[in-house]
Image: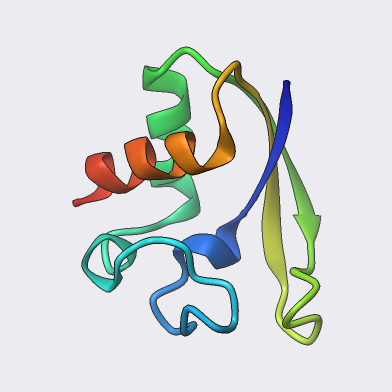
Length: 84
C-alpha cells in the first residue's frame, strides 16, 4: 500500500488545523533527515520529493512516498513515538 507523508505533518510551527498530525513535543524533535532515519530503521521503502502541502501551498515542504502495509494513522503514531 502506498502512503503519502508530508513533512508538514511534523512541523512544530503548524497548528493541527494547518496539518500537523503529531504532538507538539514530538514535532520539536523533527527534521527531514530524522524521518528518513526512522523509515530506514523500520525497513520501509520510501521516496522523497519536493512538494507543497495543499492546506498551506505557500510553504515548501517534502513529500515522502512510503510503501507500507499499515494504515497511515498507525505509521504516524509509530513515527511519533520514535520522535518523542
